[in-house]
Structures are given as structure tokens and as C-alpha cells.
Image (cartoon, rainbow, N blue to C red):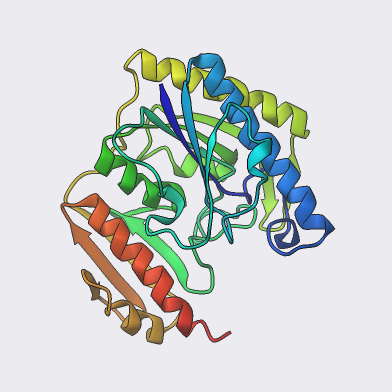
Length: 277
């Protein structure tokens, strides 16, 4: 049983401020410790269920947030800031299941803690086949390409609910309730980790029972992306497959989910130069 784990930080219990997610101060060190605890809980649950090989893809900020020698289960650690597949780097058809740990809500959805969609300075709204999505839905395009089910997603309630349309059957573990974009009612880390461990074990059992399927995304698929400025929309069209549909809106569509994802990530990388900062 081979498990791919993509983790973010904003959806981890106890994290409610950007200083806990970026920077080099004391708050960030707390964020790193809390994130490591939840990642290890998911690994422990996967091993409990029978996982024999694990790859952890660091998907947050500079993508080098954890100490590799502190990961459980002999997990491999994929880190570093330049990754063509970004949050899904390392996933291929050899994996039996993918886990999303510490994920967060979309920028345009219901108020969720530290919500954004890849880059809040660029992206203001994304729809996949007419349904609002965050990073969980966009990343599911890669899982669909490889035929790998997503078995676990953890974060706040808004994040888990947002994943229901495209990730049916996935175990959803709520570790905090968002009060606003910068406040949340958090479970104690020990309680959050226990729930994640149990959810991960249940996800493995579902895979073994043949009860999980790859993401439910109809093809051909269409991504509609609203950007913050007209300059960004114009620049986005420099990426193959991206078409401008309005002043600040572009569309990517096609039969190949991996190509859609590549175009979206390329657009995110490129439009950073038009952020104005």
C-alpha cells in the first residue's frame, strides 16, 4: 500500500495567523511543530491500516517546512520551492491513495481561516466545471490523471465541505471551526492528531475494500479563473491553453486534466510578476 501525502499549513489546528505559516520567528516555529504533529498523525494512521510506503510532499510556502528526520514511518520527503506539479509533485500511478493534510478553504468561498487559492495576490475566484473550488479541487486534476483516489482531507469545516463535490468517499477530518478569516475554534492538537490518525486508517481500509475511486471530475473539464487585475488576465494568456473571457477572467479547458493543471500552475507562477509588490 503506497500513500502520497500533500500537506499545507493553514488548515492545521492552532494555526490562525500568517506569522505561524511564514517567516522565521517564534510563531512560525510553533506552526511548524503543529504541522509536523498532524502530518505524523496521518502517517501513523496510514501505517496502522497497512501502508508500506509513504511520500510526503511539502506543499506550503518555500516547501521546506519540516525536519525530514522527524517524519514517522520512514516516509520520503519531497521538499524545495520549484516543483512543476507544485502541491502534487511526486504523485504518479504507482500510488494507491493520496492524502491532503492541513488544507484550507478557497479565497472566494465562505469565510475560512487564512483562505486563499494558490496566490491571494493574483487569484480571486476559481470554478471547476461551474463549481467553486479551492486547492483540493484543483489538485484533484492531477490525481484524476493518474487514476489515484484522494482518501483523506483535513482542515476546517469549510475546507472539507468544499471537497465533497469532486472527492466523494474521502475521509474528512475537521480539526477547527473558522470564526472568520483570522480566528478559529481549534481542537486541542492531541485531539486533532487522534482524529487524523483514525481518519487516515479508515481511508486505507476504504482503499483495501475497493471503496474509493479517482476524483469525480467530468471530462472535458473547464477551469474559470478570476484574477485581481486586467494586467494579470492579459499576462495569463501567454500560457498555452489559457483564453481570456472577460476583463479579469480567463478559461482553461480540455480533455487532459494534467494539461489543465499545468496551465493553471504556469499561470500562477507567471502572474506573480504582476502582483505589484
